[in-house]
Length: 133
Image (cartoon, rainbow, N blue to C red; front, side, top):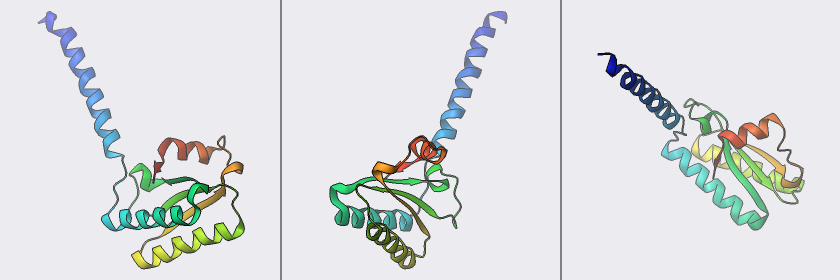
């Protein structure tokens, strides 16, 4: 019986790792077909409008972590090279129009790519949990 003790410890360790893996998989974003569709239309519209100037497009927040509720908003980081006020307004207008059309709340965080501070806590959280679109 004593000879089984090391193997039992190994099995417990293996089981613990398996549980961690399941928890990680469960934390991936669970988006409805409607939400995925709205995000795809948003991404397509932004790529068409800004082309190579669109630096970053990332889903973040509770929906990216997989912990959002059905009524949670869809937070989207949009970084644009040489962004202007008109660019910001265009992103916000597109997100609002899509939100109305799909009965969703899209919340874009729009910033100039060159002034985005990667050292801030929000930026680090987006880097860790965000899902590229």
